[in-house]
Length: 402
Ligand SMILES: *Cc1c(COP(=O)(O)O)cnc(C)c1O
Image 1 (tube, rainbow, N blue to C red):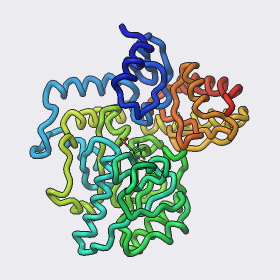
Image 2 (image 1 turned 90 degrees about the vertical axis):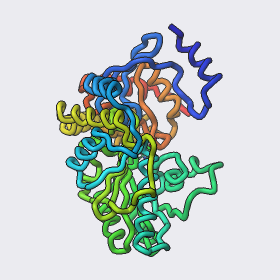
Image 3 (image 1 turned 120 degrees about the horizontal axis):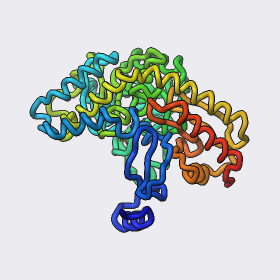
Image 4 (image 1 turned 120 degrees about the vertical axis):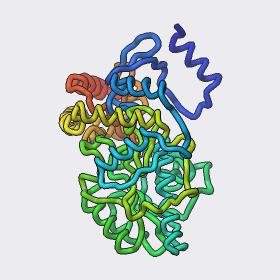
């Protein structure tokens, strides 16, 4: 079998080069463990960036995908398929939303929300409502629409002109939002917890205030739950912490346990916003992805994952608070459920720290450039969290400096 170095040099010949991957090639995984092509074992507490809600290659999920692949994969959206109907029913049953549109990714789910917002007002005869209000440090995806409402200038460089108008307000700052939401606002888009931006938890009063402002001024409220949805924060959706009901929310990442799937969930009020012909996706809602989505929910129920996530999240938060208390290299712990972060001190080199953690066979990712992000499978075991925390402590005790 080819070795890490051989495959990486081949990758460098044929892959685009828009990523900066770690220097090994992964070949298999189970639960929170992965192995590279040379059979080195790594503890994965990154969860494929909050995607592996039920862990790597969960047998229930793998079996459902294999069975569905042998039965029916795709028929196009000109025909119903049974799995898409069953999955939409399940999501409606578990949330406050009434109808579901399926896409293939988070950015696509957000595109659907942005288009829904404009078209909703257009159909109501309000053709002036075309603007969006978003937050600084937000992340909504890489396609042009989602990128345009992403509040991180580094992702905009070289990509302008973007789609607008879009106004950006600091996160958790209701007064700043108050100034931007007006008669031209189609929608406000916000993450209940800013994840990529650095793990900033939205205050309940802030999110509730956004709902009030949008209602008063006729704008829609859109929640990007691509990372916070599907149990990640210890509740099925992140919105449940504040009780706020947005007009629509986007889902992806953990929704099918690693299989590509995205969704937009909407309330009845805006359900007519995208009439036939206004939006579509060739692959969206295909039977194979939806079977994976159904199997993921089966594991949620079989393993009571929402309760497990809440308990393991509290355990991890406590462990990370202890890291902050004992390591000068870490200054703050924050997060919710199994979306947790530790802020690295100013003099610590984040990329070198990540690399050193990998040398100790622990996989994590950064958020906001300076936050070590933990987003493991929701069924991560306490022993695995202990193993990861011990490695973090060991590495941060002698953290690489800038
Ligand atoms: C990851 C992410 C996206 C983009 O999802 P893709 O599947 O990569 O397109 C959008 N919003 C949030 C909050 C995310 O975390």
